Length: 228
Length: 228
DNA sequence: TGTACATCAGTGAACGCGCGTTCACTGATGTAC
DNA sequence: TGTACATCAGTGAACGCGCGTTCACTGATGTAC
Image (cartoon, protein in one colour):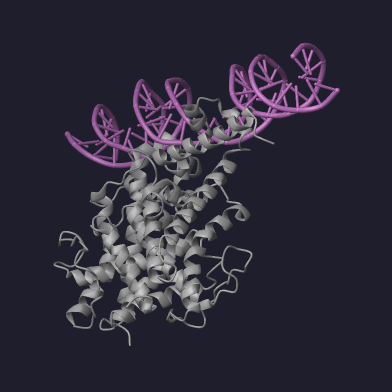
């Protein structure tokens, strides 16, 4: 049952392929990802990669899953570093970790949240769960605050129709709409700041993007009663 | 001084090239833009396009300038349709037009705000002015409200360092930091919602994105005293 | 108004490069007896 | 422990396709006299 040398080697090559794929994305962007390029760098012929992935699309899927997972783990780890009762502190830690991850893993962030790669369609059953996992961290904290009566409702009209994710996802089961709404508001806000910064649209306007980001997030926490 | 037939023809071909380029982007994404593809569709050989653009990059730049200009004009026209004194109404009209433009011109929006095209670097002296022009619409309205004493300051720490664009841009001269800050907050918020929606990340969660969007924008206007 | 010359849109061939995927194969590693 | 066979990572050649850019050229349109 212990892994044979061949199995170990295979495992290592799989990791090496993804490592070089990420490296290539960093240089040429996600659309610059090519099997030929990876093979060249790894010192194999291109057809050899077909022993590891059925094709380019399967490799992209693997990279996307890895990226979402890495982001989610970063968020979870940031959350676990703050006292459980300090909801505002936990959320701040998580969203700051989110931003830091995006800045440090530009390619990965671009891969999952940038322009979709044309000709590639992600298989949702594989990418959805790790994608939701990160969001679930924030929803989980909000839910705890909500149950403790510490979350002030954010106003929204009854016409807003949200899809409440069932317990089959990573989200806590039976999520109140108020909690999901606040989660979505926070997510769209942080996403806007990060994307504009990452793609260079605000660099001439905002000289201290992290302070700006932090203030926006604190503002939101204040408006739902988690600060002050 | 009147245009010769040849000049008219040239003008039409220039327009036709950009039209087909946009069509191609709609199908294959911005990275799928190719001179060969355009030439094929227009019924010319590829080298013929060099009579019109010095190369692929110059064409991309032209498309980017067109996109920013089209967005700015849409915003300006939305603004002019509301009574000048109704600052909240004007801003709502402008941001709703912004979102509608993004949804109706997905390719153009992706081109200017999506993942930067690898290997291409936009000449800022050409793209910056039309990019700022749209933002200036919102800043202009905010400035009027500010001068009329109707804009409540949005709280932010003194450490935030904003670059106040000088009068050489399209921005109104000597913009108060409070106005710019609110403008930036609004921009990052609307951008987050639009990007997430456009790239399909919220479609399973938010079933009525426009209502959500409108509510977020109204919430902001309320928090700076322009509504209620 | 008619002719001579200049302009310039567009061609066709070529260059050198990239890509993903298939296929029959070699040869080393692993397994069963 | 040694041999016979099965597995499977990796090769090399080929297929058919894409791309941007250059160059010498043709032939129609426009201009000067």
